[in-house]
Image (cartoon, rainbow, N blue to C red):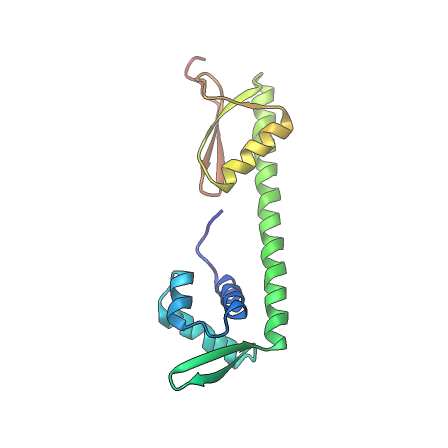
Length: 160
């Protein structure tokens, strides 16, 4: 379920990294987030301006980032929002797979092929198990294809 991180996801990650290591550098943060140092700098400036982070000079050229109580509250809020969005996406995926499996059953099948990998494919596997649909590698059965965050059902079977 990987997507490009939004600003809020980046800010959540920044707050988590800084909480673990207040002496972390912007270069290290950029490497951990997979973004340019300028992007990290922009986010940090925003978080500082909003009062979520304070900066103290640790040494001549070294900074220490301190998360304020407001910053801790923001991190908690962003974490809850992330969890809620993730669970909503999980429920939506499961519902879509259940609908596909109902179509499969109506067509007289109790087995499917699964094409794809990752978290969405894992949701498909669990939903198939729950619904009593066996996942096989055989031809001649419907196929669930995972394509990013989409699950497509292909009813055309080679031996049909």
